[in-house]
Image (cartoon, rainbow, N blue to C red; front, top):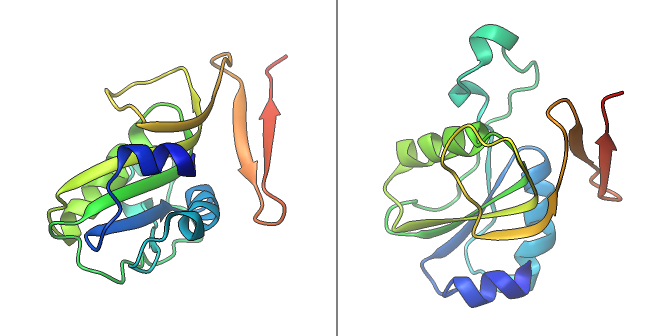
Length: 153
């Protein structure tokens, strides 16, 4: 993924990386040192930006987002573990825009699966998984990082 990101994104003083809690932060922590990005790694907790919290309730472990740089005019590499419906990425972009106006956002995900509900696509994908609607994939970690796939009976 790091090689593909280097091909797609000009990494310079305007580039920053942001991981989405929790799995996206873990993946970003692995990619970040490989890309020689000068800005510190940012972290987003999108709990307040989700569109389903009225149905599922608030996450009991809401963490503050940490963006130790100005978002304005930055080329942001947004990292998450699993891209499924696209709703997590939409929430993350909404939060990023509350911090400022980035020049661009490039999405990198470890796993992409079918089931998109929003027109969101990753520029860089570690792997694509064919899963049924009721199947789930989850990244566990951080040490070691492992993918758990749970298939519906």
